[in-house]
Image 1 (cartoon, rainbow, N blue to C red):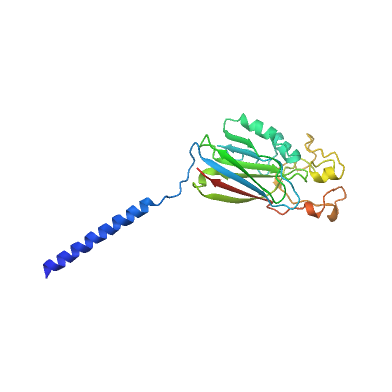
Image 2 (cartoon, rainbow, N blue to C red; image 1 turned 30 degrees about the vertical axis):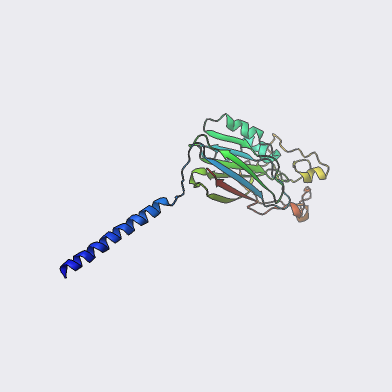
Length: 246
């Protein structure tokens, strides 16, 4: 009897070990998501314009090893950011960052993103330390409304995506008069204005970046405005989807 019990116990033990080895091999065969950032990592950055009548200016995509590379909430906007926020011109901001040693990527988007449309840009990481990607653009039927969302690329596993709904910021560099002579968008052009865009004079008494409170429009009593209720936007106004493909 003792011999039979011993043999039965041995068989159970061997089966258990075999089962463990099988499970370990099975677990080892499952590809686990890889996080962290390496040189050569690639991402698809998709920006969706959720507004009803606010075209987005060409994107600026900037990755840096430093946080708050493009702006800091509650602080004055740089002149380079002012160019983007008032006129939709991303060139000064990109040129400035291309000469910054902390910056790896300083790329432009393809073009204007109309309301309801999505643009996708692929980026490749060269410096793994530059993990903080900022995606920036202007809502062009405004005085100085912009989006600039910072994302930590190292937190996105391979073949996974991160979705962000980006708030709209007010650069605080220009009064929100919404006139045909002070905004660069198609609403100003249609009204026959000069659609100036960037102006070096800062006439907004706040002179710091804050959360944008939205378009007022002429339908709500702003007599200087060429904007209508159609040009209003909800906050957040933009969806950003970042997919790591390598």
